[in-house]
Image (cartoon, rainbow, N blue to C red; front, side, top):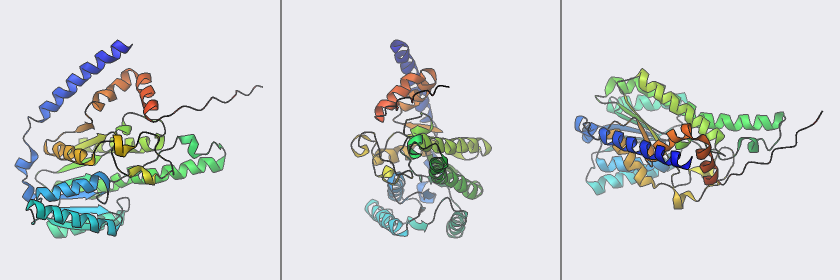
Length: 323
């Protein structure tokens, strides 16, 4: 079995490298749409990957950079950082717009769309980087109570996760896709998703399922709107405090992300490359792409590795009631 898994991994890794090399043969998007004309909207720019991407776009000298987040004070900090990056890179012509709003609120997204239309006559690039975490095993959320109270607690947590990981991306897509298609010569959308959306993990049942829902949504949208370049970005654990505000009140079980996780700077640069080369599916690290396929071939092997990563041991099975 171990030999079969190793051989399958080598074959899939070789194919993955080949497909990635082919993507770099395409003409870069920035050659068709110069940065000085590009209008970028980052949803979820007040922290994490979105914040780092905002800084990179400011340094690149795009025409307009719209940053969206729920907290105006945090957005003001990001806007200042972006302006400083513009000065340092000599790209002071970039216009930074701080747009406070919740991407799961229809009224907020419509207002932001109208502001962008009035200010820039449209948009070229949309990055959806907002989301929420959930870190506890499903029945742990119910506190092992199968009655109505415990079940309702799970439903409440799932509703919060669905709002942040599915409804938000849904509202953003419906709001901005028509403007994107009608105003950009090279429209592009990148969804910052998660490796958990394609490789299940213990303690991440609600998080993984809601992220998988938005992944399938955007994959279907890529078929429905072929003139837009969709990129599904699926990183493994990334450094930062994303898990600190889990909607289920859980804490991370894996090793400290700030010591072992992917660096936000590396993730942001990979996102930029993926958009520029029109890559449809991106795993980071790239070896997770073949691992995704290995899961379907050897599920128990991948499941055991996932349990080890998250330090998860299943609870003992309760005694079977007789009679």
